[in-house]
Image (cartoon, rainbow, N blue to C red):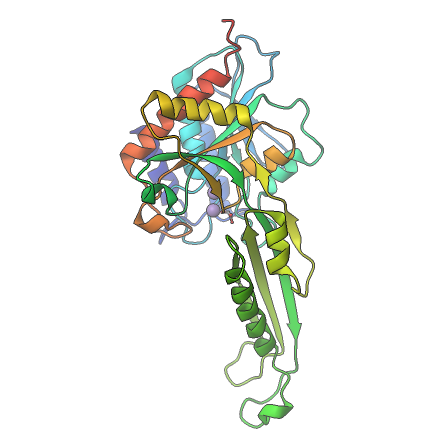
Length: 352
Ligand code: GLV
Ligand code: MN
Ligand code: MN
């Protein structure tokens, strides 16, 4: 299948292990150039906005009507998976190519720097929405791997997202005093890493005590970073998520830094129904689930775009942000068919 071949081509950029196309790097640019080439081959009109987001547009028979958008991101985390982000772009392109001209204009978007490994995340979609989107598209449908075990546990190849979790991220700095590791008595130390370690464990306990919440410290730098020097400065990242804003606040309370918050956001009834209708038409159970991961669809939804997401079953226990991320070829194929059906429906006004 062309989608799988294209995923392989994107995966090869930057070399292994895993996908290494961090936002803002040459590898992300290379992925955008590759996809822009495929969009041109498909006869789409290319546009790149000031944030570097890539748009491939297939003009509708009634281009004055609000457009129908699909897509996702092409950047990855370090050692990322084959599907995260890339599937939504190449699957979206496949769907638009196969649909051909419809009443409404169809647009495939590759957003920049969704992962935000060292920043707030969703840089491209936030930039697009920052001044308010005018005119709003009729719908945005993002195809993505689930990145968790729920669909596999439900024995369902596909699911429709109800809402995207709330998040709070922060960078916390601990200052201590450097000193000799061999001669400074324990009571006289001011070790920045001990204070940092206490926060790491406090967050773990706080998240474990709140239903549906998770907390992660994924980045930590220690200065001066020598085995025989007491740590004088530690900078660490905090990432807290939960199904609603209140639970995020509960876990993140007391984090000694400014929090960058993203509120939980519900997906929109019309594109959601279009996806569910396609599942029903294929005799698939209408599994609906919330997303713990952040997505560009959440940013667009918060900006007033009727947004929905189709999840594909993740295998290997649902692992993601890892080279072990995997989905079955036949599930991907089915997802593209469902996406085609839903986008086709949304791109029609019913009076063709
Ligand atoms: C994006 O993958 C996220 O961190 O949720
Ligand atoms: Mn993603
Ligand atoms: Mn990701």
